[in-house]
Length: 310
Image 1 (cartoon, helix red, strand yellow):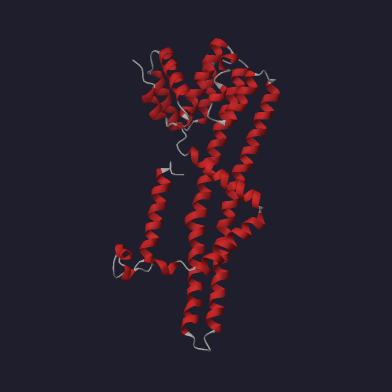
Image 2: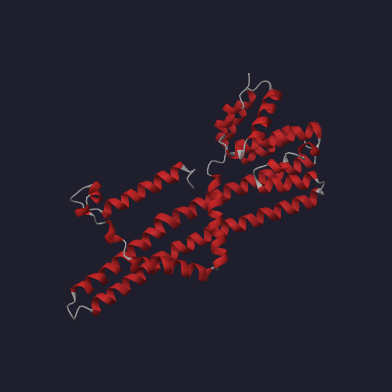
């Protein structure tokens, strides 16, 4: 998550914006630094948070199950690792492997398989090197994509569930607070009346914050990244099957270019038309890949600088 600078900066901006509303308007944005003007603590009412946070997560677990919710949050962490993924970098690596296979056969990748960053690519290439039938291999790779998509969809569904339940429990807390307020109105117990109004307002506030600041943006981010990872895995599948079928690396490259967005595809093609000493570049790219962990998650512009030769 911290790798996504745009997400982090936007989240910090929203948090600061909310903190601004939590402070004394007569003391300015930094009023919360003055103990006499500190209003922030007033917005963290334990009962309000228990109603919204506790109720929201309990309802989400009732909807799915504790194990599914746990799996969903594990997927959030995994998906956020792909925020810098550039499919042009993936294309560089796949065509490199294809050229090695073309020259030396699939067994040339036997020692490289365990170094591959993606579990999906690692599993597929291991089966390819072990000589799996292409039809069986394709079926297994398709099934694996389906299984991964299920996990990503579950992640998005759980976050959307939290987004839906949080405002509902905020309204429940609002009703509870107003009932407490009215129940004490006849007695004239001002502290209890104020406590009821506070619960009513803060549960609505925290329900909205959880839904609109945390769950909804994160669900959208995971949905976007899940689709990107699916596209990458389909690239991997096509590349693996192409290597098994001993297709020409140029044919493979043209096929995989269809997974790249039009603007990025033009930049990629222009760069490769200008390249010289391709063998030297391949040797350097392979060397950097062997020495790196997760080179596939490197942005393509950075990769170009790393493998520049001549």
